[in-house]
Length: 632
Ligand code: C2E
Ligand code: MG
Ligand code: MG
Image (cartoon, rainbow, N blue to C red; front, side):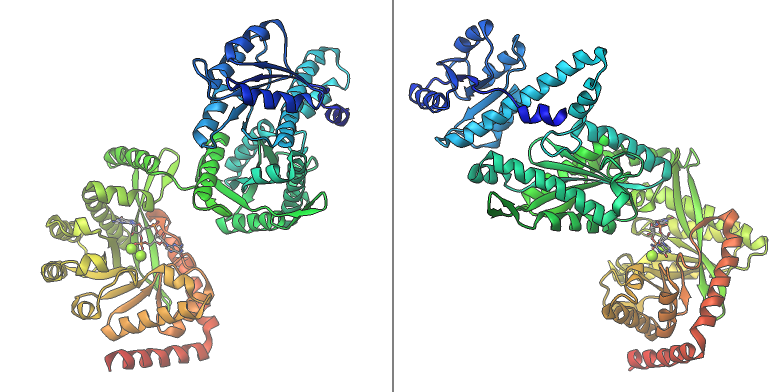
């Protein structure tokens, strides 16, 4: 029934109103349309046409944008306020600038046509607009018939839910499904990607091959998207109707040449990228239309729930922004949503106002992450890592530490962390957890304050902690920025009982000359380098060089972010035995530290066992080689 309704379309010949103040253009246009047997009524102004419209309906109104007194935009608005508000309106414009086009749509036009004598193109445009209005009319009609029951309800659902051309869900249906999908993702703590696919320069296809060919391409695009999603995600991924809620992906057509995808249960950005790569590859194969091949490229914007928005509207509008950015960069690419400065400012402002109250409201907590020494299979220390719980959300340090640093709030926060962590650390030691050292992160601003020295003394003294039990983690940049001034400060901290570590080593650019003079006892190899281990030869080479450098300087080297047993073994083979990372233990609250330490020791023993005698021998040989190299 639905198919029949669709193919019947609107009945020709159409009655067309042409409104243009230019008599020559009016004459040309009217003659071209009359040639098709259509009834054409031409008017020199908007008000004239509106007078006539009070007495009779037209199938469509074509209206020139630029006219004296009442222009095309105002004419459109008046039609929309009239009794014949549903009449399709096509704006004729001489300007291809986005501004007029946007204004035309804002004024209520359904489409626009750039004035040219390309009559077949204009005729196709008119047909599709009148067809769409007819579908709309049937929809309303079916709605009225609904009380009478029959197939009407099904037809109504079909019309209301689907785009007649591609048979894919339309925008409204997509929004409803996306609402279900986001609720599910929220409940299951999963990510959900929303992608908008825009076909680059689709108008050229319409203009050169005709609208009918353009329609065919759109239909095929829809089919290929669905097939590619099925291939990429599995046959069941789109549900029975091609697109249900319940953890199924959904592909939809938006007005014009845009398609939308909702892809649930995504585990990572790279999984989304891979799926989209597959979809785009399918669309970039040639389309054969009426015997000729045509190619399309696509601009795709993506937003991920919950990171980039937690409502369907926010996700779609952020994916749309990403699409527009791709187009502005030159099209034919995939772009991820990035917050604008304005949004970033708003977020920063919210974080900042929250931070002001966080200490008083006791929203901060210190977590501890153990590090292990694989040579002895023991946990020798812990790093204090700040956590901020706001309502039911835990805000990651990467989001709030930079704001705290910029605003100076990092100093009271840093002092709180130092005192609080030292207190908890002392308590753990009293409870019998044998830990030698507590590492605390110190940002540059805090380092520059004299209060750091007094804070350190207080932390050690008030908690009866022995000297060298607190390690201050500083960055390379912080230490060597103003080297001659910094050095005495570092020495004073050491005299007061601290040891010093360089955090995230390898990401700064300190020269070797400075490094040899720094009174540090530890280098923490940044986790970015550790993550490269086993992936590429260069990754291993960088780790090897840093480890060798640390050994040459005679300081301990700790590898951060160790996540796999392979990384741990490779590090051991390179001569680094002190490690911190999720493989051994995640950061945990003080109360859970004891069991985290026990588990870390079990993992360490397992690694040492697996490394075997050959690995250990290689490790010792590397250690000696490395020392030799740097010292020479
Ligand atoms: P960081 O000092 O380099 O801390 C190590 C970070 O690596 C921690 O992130 C830790 O949770 C994470 N990590 C540990 N093992 C692994 C692993 O195996 N894989 C991965 N992917 N990550 C691992 P966190 O807690 O999110 O902290 C991030 C950064 O925020 C810290 O980097 C530090 O620069 C800063 N920060 C954290 N707490 C404080 C604090 O109390 N004061 C200051 N000033 N900065 C802090
Ligand atoms: Mg650190
Ligand atoms: Mg670090």
